Image (tube, rainbow, N blue to C red; front, side):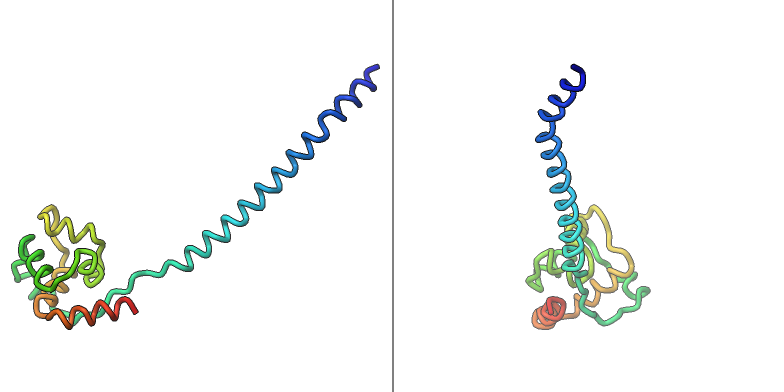
Length: 134
């Protein structure tokens, strides 16, 4: 009697077992595909290249007054968006926003680049942006 009951139960559960095995295989395949896609995404992401600005001595840059209003004024004079200015300086858009709002100040290396931007014209800045995009 027991043997007969056991064999009947196994017959009932066999399709369920097969389905579970199939689902496990699908999960394994999906994980493998996700890993491949993540690798492709990492390869596709290339770091944003910062265009080369002429180097200004950090001591000289430290003496130049750069307030929030002057940073914004020079950005608007060059007709740059905050994102474009960030690309030129090698910082994020949010960093430029913080500088212009006066919530943070540029570090010495960025101050030097800002001082250099003050001496460039619109055409030169657009050329640098084109260089960064290439």
